[in-house]
Length: 165
Image (cartoon, rainbow, N blue to C red; front, side, top):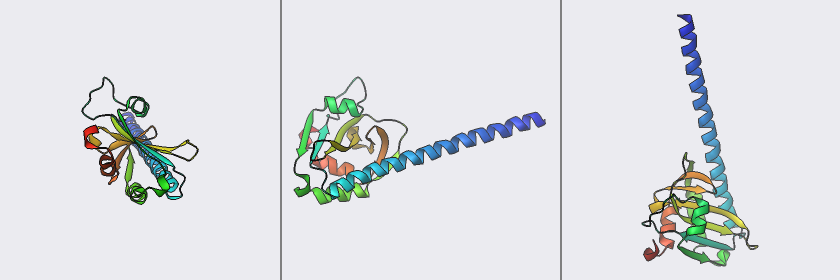
């Protein structure tokens, strides 16, 4: 009987420890995603974002494989480019929307269809935010899958002309 009890206690401790490790890892990934989003907002605020590319692959178009960040950047169908971002009239609204966006890490990469890619004056990438098919609230920051809550997906949808969606 004591052997069974020892095995039961060991099993409970093992699974409890694994669950705690997963929660710690998840909160670390969420914090990292939040920091990357904050870094993008800070770069926008301090004027180090010169150009923004908005990429889109039509939601209704089927593919054999889900689009990850790399595939989306190769296969996109439409691009909207905003130059001279610091003087752009939508600048302050975008900063506000990014700052108010809540992110949480996700366990799987969704089928991505849209992206906002930020570039500095030297043409180097500052950051990228990717969005799931049909703007469902999933996405990625860099290659980290996330779930998004807030007005950023609505803002993005408004930036992509409806015939291109």
